Length: 331
Image 1 (cartoon, helix red, strand yellow):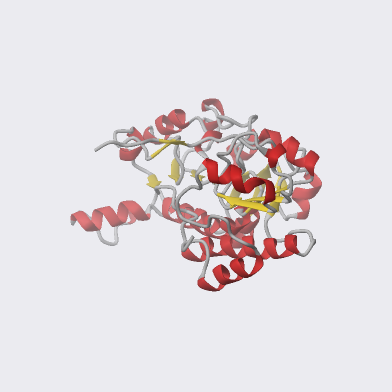
Image 2 (cartoon, one colour; image 1 turned 90 degrees about the horizontal axis):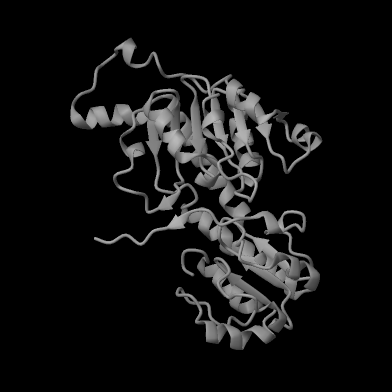
């Protein structure tokens, strides 16, 4: 609660609604079921309550503060009942977009290798040979696999670099993509023609391993792939093998299992920048989530439509999936 709600927003929250639980630990299921019939809104990090919507007699909205859409929720029933399903995912977009840009720069300029060499006392000074395999982001053709909240924020961040931005997103029309200032491009063409590729797609039932081995082999030698949405979208073992073989570089913030296998070969691959799923973990971003929740609860209690959070759409609600597996690690 303290991470997400500032003192000001916590005060606003209690002034707006009667908070039934509001503690850091998950609400016990018996307490949840007892409170459900009179609840106007549910705020949670996911959905762990099962098929209980018929008992939610007064429910008007479910607000999730996670970065995605809980696939366990019965979206069709929510739409039938007029229950809004809202996600705070847009609150993460700015932080993740900045991290994606940082990862791309770190990878294209091999910043991590230079840091490791300095720490080990093995650096070379003013040697052109050490920089000949790096490149400038400025003026390069960049590909976006997905143009959602993160993609739109990242496109704006790239404007000073003068990049041509190609985009592939089957959930958006070409006309919409053009209006957003990107070039609609078939996926294979985007992979083959982009110097930097950002994987930003929402995980769905249709896009598991969308970037298959065959598609990853289309990436031009020396290019950079930045993975910040979910590992679900990529054949991760093929990615590992190709990066270790020096086909292209990669910057990775998300993994198939988290915490990730300490012995996985991606950890020792050259030309890789690794980050432990922390792109969205910035205090300003987390408190933006709480601010969005309170803003929309204020609207809902006044009989107005929520405007700050992202609302689930009937056409897409049944296509979301849970992807990252959380692993209980023993000592």
